[in-house]
Image (cartoon, rainbow over all chains, first blue to last red; front, side, top):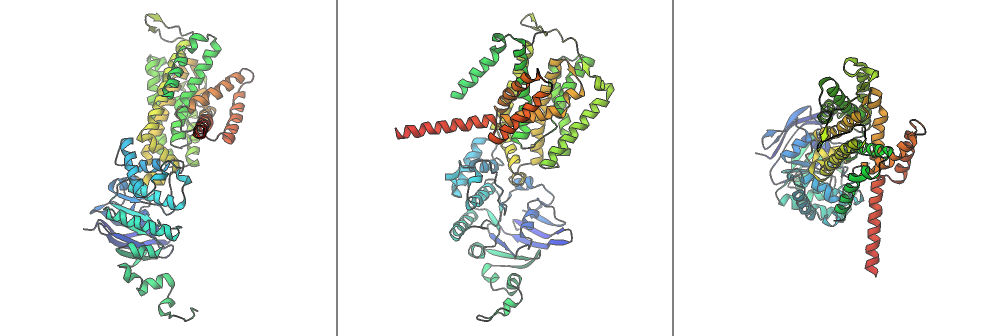
Length: 248
Length: 325
């Protein structure tokens, strides 16, 4: 049985079908990449899974139990954590406070929550910044803080929404190592990303979404040569493009 | 360590102040300062910690005041229980208000509290069988109570002083506990970002309702005391928007989301206000407003926050000097 099973998920915003009859499975222990052109519906999928937006149709099964209709906080209780594409740290709180707050989910005493938060901060290499305010961090650090906060809730599934967006190549390599590390520690990861290099190097499987529909579901090496995917990203002509030829 | 000493000194000063300074005006001023500290602390829990700006806190003050008054006048319930029951009634009233208003976020929430407060005031004004409407309720005598065999003289202000001092301590202790536990941490998360708070498993509606209930309880108790101290309530005296705004002023000027802030805010504003009230009626609000502007411009973290940063700077300077010497 898959850890997370999405069946026939559909969401319309007015006349626009943001996600349409989308089904996929996430197996325990894997890193699943979720890619697609801008506006394909990737972030909406995350919002649907985590309960921020209710779907029009479809089911989301976590370990066989439907979690559609639950509030975001109780989905977090059940072990699904997410990060936000546009980082949403608690800006006027320190890094340690940010992460402790998430650790409170599993530890009611402040001491234990703080100890857990420190462990997580060491893992994401933010421990030196524990006393800084979240608003004083660089974007790269804020993205890691976002991951740390999600990790501190001790999730089974971690949904990462563009953790590499806006980072430079060194930071991207660094973050890729972190994501793989998290996976090795037993957390299943679903990863939305535009930085394809990072996806290709780290994911076990990649799903491509276009106009809210799934157009491919295969290992990363096959994704890059799949004509349907190339068409979605670059247009029809790209498939017949030969080296040296002018595009128009 | 230093903090404990300061707190003990504070408690001693609080304890002997009315015995040392016997001027009735001074004791009245102290009572007003302490009462407004409780009201500021009440507003601070919801507005400072949880970041939910309310313009309608007079509702809870009024609920506490009327409950205590009505229970005493028609059922003969002693005000000492009445004040406490007033707090509970304020909590009960806060629940449906929270249920309705917390569907809204940010400024829309604030506006809805303003609307609810007006509705409550108008209900109190027109429900004459319960509240006697604009005429108000008046009590002439307070019950005989003896303390260590001595009958308490209600004509003196000193017994009221000790009662409100105890209530203030309770309010500050509640704030301290809130600031130190998971509840307080959750409230801060609400203030910062509701979506993020939900994503890490915080039931944000419940957390806001808890904050509102705690806040309403303190305001209700202060309201009950207010009624007994002045021995008179009418809808405009306890449900007016002016009162709600004064609570906000005190919390903001003192320092949002700090334990001692409301006390500092009340000392500064009430002392100023009461001193000017003698010369022109309602003039105190002008000074509140003026001070509020100064505070927002020069001390956005409030007086208390400002003092804290100054202390930190001084300590840093000391450390640096020691380091070089």
